[in-house]
Structure formats: C-alpha cells, structure tokens
Length: 313
Image (cartoon, rainbow, N blue to C red; front, side, top):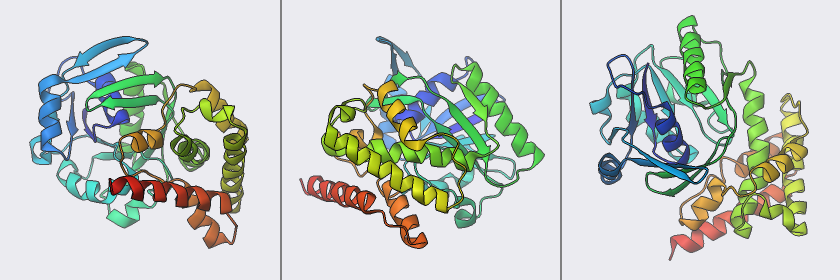
C-alpha cells in the first residue's frame, strides 16, 4: 500500500513512524508531505525522533514539500488542522486518483461535509483517534498514551474504497496502533468532540495538563457546563450517544493526566488553535437549532482574545 501522510504535526509524525514500512518499494511505501520546504529539509536530514516510555528512536521517513515528487498514492492521511484543510486538499490533488482513499483526521465536526465542499473524486473516510501525541519540537514526537483509532464513511463507499479502508485498519493494527472500522463514524466524531470541547480550551486557558484541570473546582465546573451544552446540541441533531459524554470526558482527563492537549500546545507555541472547529462548532450548531450555548461562547471569546494578544507579540 502506498501511503502519503499530509502534515508532520504530532499525529502525522506518530502515524508516520509507526506505519513506515521496513522496506520502501513501489507497492509498499510511505512519505510525508509538508507545506514547509525548510522543515521538510530538516526532517530529511535528522529524521523523526519518536519517544515513548522514556525511550527514543530516530526514524528516517522521507519528507517532501512538493506533492509532484510523491504523485498518486493509494491512501492519503490528512493530519493537518481544520483551519488548513481547504488549502491542503487543493494542494494534494496530484496525490489523488479516482481510486485513492482520502482519510480525514481532524478535530471537530466542521469537515464532515468536505466532500460536497471540495468535490472529491470518491467518498472520503473519516478517522477518530485517541492516541496521545505531543510534538516537543519539529520532528520530535512523544507518544504520551495509547488509544484507539476508529475509521469509517459518512456516505456509502464503493467496494474498492471499503477494501482500502479495511486494509488500512489492518495495517494500523500490525503497526501497533489499535484500530477498528466503525459503522457509525458520525457518532464517533461527536463523541471525540465532546471530549475536546471540555478539555482543550480549559487546558489552554489554565495552562494545565489534562489531569490538572480536574484539581480546580472552577475548571471542573466549567468542563461540566461545556460538555453538557455540547450534549444538548448533539441530541437536537439526532446524534446517537451511547456513553455519558461528561463521564467519558472525565475518564479521559484521568487516563491522560500528563498529556498536553493540542490547544495547550498551540498556546505554548503561540499558534492559532482549532477553537472554531471545536467549541465554535457547538456555538454555530446551537444558534442554528435555537439552543443557548453561553459557556462555549465564553471560551471561544477567551481563546480568541488570547490568540490576538500573542499574535501581536
């Protein structure tokens, strides 16, 4: 299987080093596409440093800033932020053939109508991953906690696309990444959204790890209100909810207590966050449905104010 991973962020680097085949060949290969030529050169020179359980290992995964150098592949894993998705898909057209499986691995729910927006050649797949990955520096990823990666389609795929997704799930399993096919990926995307809605903005605002926000009564109370608002919106959207969203979010906080959320990583590196795709999505859906979401509105306002402040530094 020929795989292209777009975006050498935390999850992109994690998936790359674990999926990288022992031998690169025409039928079995993996490359990373990066929008930055400078970073691509850095990663090609020094490789990707994978850290887990206190151990480190360097992997020489090929990286290119030119999609023409990669060409059409079997699977494209899009590991970029939601805000960069539209531009990313346009850049990646040379990676696609009518048979290519495109897999979206973003936080939030704003990308679920991407097929209609971008007129993709085939129904894309969507992935939800609870793997804990922290990017400590360009090309240096810490595997902070094991999780599950679920994959599925929102629209009926062809037999060939279904086969490719099943093969990808099997490949993930062989690489040590627990994965499964989901018959209802929409519900899984919302289940991940509930967790991100509660954890991400608060870790960024309080500058704390996932577990540390539970030690503050104020933060814990805000987490509850954020998740309950999101649950109300989801129920109005007729989303199937099988596990209590608040209890699931609290459990993730405890299980990944030392993890640095993606939004906290963004704050510490003074980068724009995915607040619009996460809490902002709840606010937008709430307005559409006539459901008040004051707690989510407030964290969106606070995160945007924080981003404005460090963008002026």
